[in-house]
Image (cartoon, rainbow, N blue to C red; front, side, top):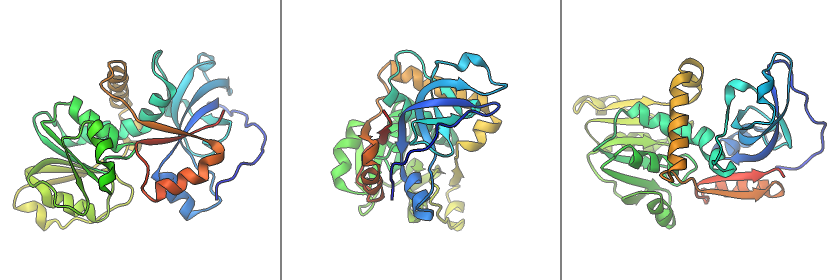
Amino acid sequence: MAQCVDRPRPQPGPGQLLVRVELAGVGIGTVRMLRADPVADPGGEMVGTVVAVGDDTDSEWLGRRIGGVVFESVYDDHVCAAPALVTAIPEGVGSAEALAVVRGGLVASGALHAAGSVAGKSVLITGAASGCGHLALQLARAAGAARVTAAVGSADKAGFVRDCGADDVVTYDEQWPPAVDVVLDGVGGKLVQRGVDQLAPYGVLVAFSAAGGAVDAATLLGECKTVTAFSVALPSRTRPELVRQWREQMWKLLREKALRPRVRIAERAGLAGVIAEIAARRTLGRMAITTR
């Protein structure tokens, strides 16, 4: 059960930034963490302002508005962050927009990158109403996809995903369109194999859900289908220049209003209720908590 407690402000160690948190994201990862350990102190994405730096840390970070990921205490007033895991937020980009893209946008961008070019192709996205999924819909459209299908858990989410750019909407209980060129799977479980079954010859499925899922390799062979995966952690460490390119592209799309994150902000006292909504799969877009 989420609860508010008082504790001392942390002090940044060597190579760390102290960030006054403005907004913090809440997602299915938060739910899984708290299910595994109800007294966990979750991390996640946040935006805020750097108010102090530790030893051996560039003082130019001071006063910057930044967004990124921390591994714990993301719902505190202040958190310590590693410079490698945050980025400066450009002028003109709102805090809610930035929160939506600093992790969810990178995952959506990376999943599309893993699929190869989607220009002129048909794309199906599962978990399409989620914080990451609704961005993937828009990014696929911006990348020139010919037709984008949103797969969602219930029909009442159809209006939301259509507003985010979906041409077609299907639920997990309905028949899906056949011969899709690309499937981006953000749900996992049985939907991984189902996505493979919907692929056209030479089609690609990109799995990016932490929920896992199994694939029968025999179902790939006859039509030369491909299954690959994406997680933002590895390219952040080994291909930072690629991650920077994705960020720059998202900042550009935000400025052009070609990418419009949907973010719902709740008070910190309402965190437990937000977590319950996410667990029940009732939310749309990115959920966030304000710490102010």
